[in-house]
Amino acid sequence: MKYISCGNVHIYSTINNIIITLSTLKGDVLAWCSAGQKGFKGAKKNTPYAASQTAKDIVEKGKKMGLKKIHLIVKGPGGGREAAIRTLSKVNIIGIKDITPIPHNGCRPQKKRRI
Image (cartoon, rainbow, N blue to C red; front, top):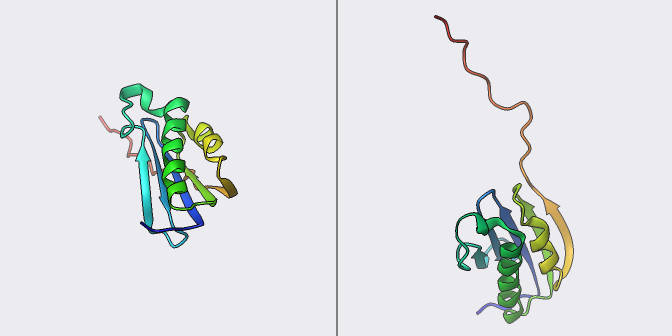
């Protein structure tokens, strides 16, 4: 088992699920957890409660590794983002970065249909 004092926590929140990954500052994955892995099914996977349970599991895994400080990296439009951040505040948060992709102008539309 690897012991770290500072690491990155990636929160990937989609419309259907939430995945939280704990990694080193270089990017090596140490632990991960998702709402589906915790036993939530269907529409309950991206609720704030499921996100907090998933984040609580990552905090426990991180504390076993000696984790004291984290950088949060949040991506996606899902509903459990804030609940996961609130639960992760049990560990000292250095910074929060939102890397959600924002479309600017989108794809080119199809040609007009000629009849």
